[in-house]
Each structure stands twice: as structure tokens, then as C-alpha cells.
Length: 497
Image 1 (cartoon, rainbow, N blue to C red):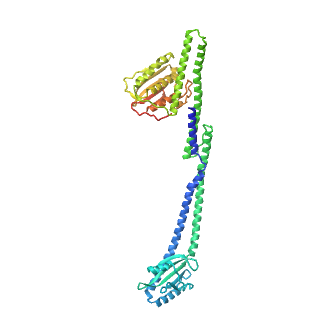
Image 2 (cartoon, helix red, strand yellow):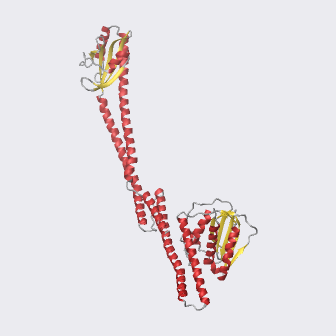
């Protein structure tokens, strides 16, 4: 049993230590939370840069297409011959006021696209073969293209607008602009966006680390305390500093520490008590046995007295061992009930009549009040219930025998069958009443016992779907124990102490 309790305690401490294991929390947080946030910020920055790039590119393309559309419409309306087209093209280039920003090219198409006139002059006579020109010739509509200039390698954007006469392409008006200014502007904007993203990531890192530290530091303290509890410092308490989940965990560890301390103390007291309880009858049995074997008793009365003591102490030892075995079965889950329909009144009356003569020899009056009527059978385990009656009557005589009187009765209470046992002893101190059903608990009582009798009784009653109430009498000295059993309640088979 002690080994089982030690194993349970070890498993409890291990669970808490696993819950408090802070090693690697920072790494897991950075890997899972911070990395995800950083990737999200980086993705937003990249998308923003791409959107800016597309916006500026589309703005430049839209401006070029509008200019090309206006100019090509003018040429298509007034240039009716090739000579007029070329003459108007020369005038257009001469008056073009955006030469520093744009290059205007007029292409002839009779012998393939050839640059006839150019605002830069250097490209005249060249034969550009780009997608915008080919598409404009094929579709008769304005088309654009961007890419590297075949001659200079510079990144440019070009818009080609076909000049139509009678449904035929007479020439092509082409506007070309360098994308280098936009590149420089986009590099600056991209640098600003990237810098802002890095600053945001850094601030996020600082905030994350501050938050993680606010968790790790108290968790480390809790871990250290859990280790101290595991190493045997039972009962130590941690000051609660936070009113959150960490505060709840602190309270749980404090409660666990106090509970382990109480259990250790009760276990020590239990071992000491059991050792004493076993030693006393064994000493009496051994002493009287040696005396009888030595044949030193000549008086038959002394001989009978010795045999009576041996039998009485043997029975007490048997009862103690049975109680310990019963408690062990409950602890390891081997405790079960054999339910049948029983006459509870008859079972209780048998127990009372059995103890009446025994207590009479000790000067204790065991009284029983007959009920006004008989009660229908209820589901229960007769052997276990007799064990409960025996323990409760034994406790009444042991702890309240000084009053020389025990009253018992059976009746009904709130739909239950109620068995009441009252003694007239000193009662139970009020501060001990909530604990009397705990295992190993003996309180301030000096009476002999191992502290598990009421725990076993309470378990048996709970598995019958009932309850065990213990309180002091209101009208005088003594303790009142009430066993409440349901008439047709489901039996609890899975509960444990």
C-alpha cells in the first residue's frame, strides 16, 4: 500500500514537472510563433513591393497609351497620304516637348517596320523587332511591351499605336521611355518597406521575448519548487504573484504540496499506529501463549482468562488485517460489490443484537429503537453493509464509550433509508469533522485504531449510491453518524478513495 501511494505521488509529481518543463519554450516560441509572424510580415512586404511595382508600371503604361492613342487618332484623321504622314511626323517631333522623358518614333511598314523618324535621332533607320510592334501590326490596336533594349540593354517600356487609313496600317507611332527612374524610385521605396518590415520584425521579437520571459521566469520558479517537492521538501508554499493561469498553477502546486505533506504525515502516523496496534495484541498473545505452554497456571480461572485474551486479541488482529486488505483492494481497484435485494432492517438489527451482549460486559448500553413499520428490500451487498455496521458500532464504543450509552435507529429521510448511530462521548472537534473520513486520519483521538475504518465505510456507502454523514449532536455531547442508502439507486462500481 505504501509502495502504491509512493508510486501515485511520483506520477503526480512527474505530471506537474512535465507541465512545468520550460527548457526549450523560448526556442519553440521563436520557431512556431515568431517565425510565423516574421514570415507573414515578410510576405506582406513583398506583396506591397510587387503591388507598388505593378502600380507604377501600369501608370506609366496607361500614360503612354493615352498619348499614343491621341496622336495616332490625329494622324489617322489628317494624314491621307504617305507624304502627309511623314511631313506631319516631322512637325510632331519638332514640336514634341517631352523629349527628355520620352522618345517618339515613327515607323514605316512597307518594307517591314523601320524607324523613319525619331525624336532622339540615333535610332532612325533601325529595325526594332519587339512584341508591341508585331502585335500592333497584327491587331491594328495599341500594344505595349517592356524589357531590355536590344541595342543598349536598358530596361524600357514601349507603346506602339498603328496609324490607320482605310483599315490599313500606314505607319506606327511608337513611344519609348526608360524605366530607370522608376527603378531608382522603386529601389528606394523597396528599401523603405524592407527597413520598416525589419524594424517591425525586431519589435515583434522584443515583445515576444518579453512575453516569453514573463512566462519562463515564474515557470522556472515553479519548476524549482516542484523539484524540491519531488526531492522530499513536502509542504513548501509558493507566493502567488499572478492572477492568471500561472497563478492557478501556483495554487495547484501549493495544494499538491500541502496534500502530499498531509499524506506523508498521515502515512507516518498510520505506520506508527498500525505497528503499535499490531504489537499490542501480538505481545498479549505471545505472553499468554508462553505462560500456558510453561504450565505455570494452576488455577483454572487463570487458564480460562489467558485463553480468552488470546482468542479476543486474535479476533482483533484478524479484524485489523481484514480492514487493511479491504483498504488495499479499494486502492488498487479490486474492490467490487455483490448486489442483491436485502432486508436492510434485518441486517442492521442482527448487528445491533450481536454487539449488545458484548458491550453490556463493558458497561455500555446499546439501545435500538424499532421503526413504526417494515421497509421493502433494497439493492445492496449484505457482507459489505455488515462490515459498515460493525465498524460504525465499534467506533461508537471506542470513541464515545465514555458516555456508557449508544442509541441506534432506522427510518426514512429524504427518500433514503437512514440508519442512525449516536454515542454520548466527547464528540469530534469541529475542525476535524471534514477530515474524519480521510484515509489514515485519526485527529486528536487517543483511541486505538489505524485511521482507515471510516474511509472504507465511506467508500462502501458511496458505491451503493448513498452517503455517510457525521456530525456532533446538537442537544448535548456525543457524535451522530447517519448512513443514507437509496431504495433503487444505481450502484457505483468505479469510484475509489
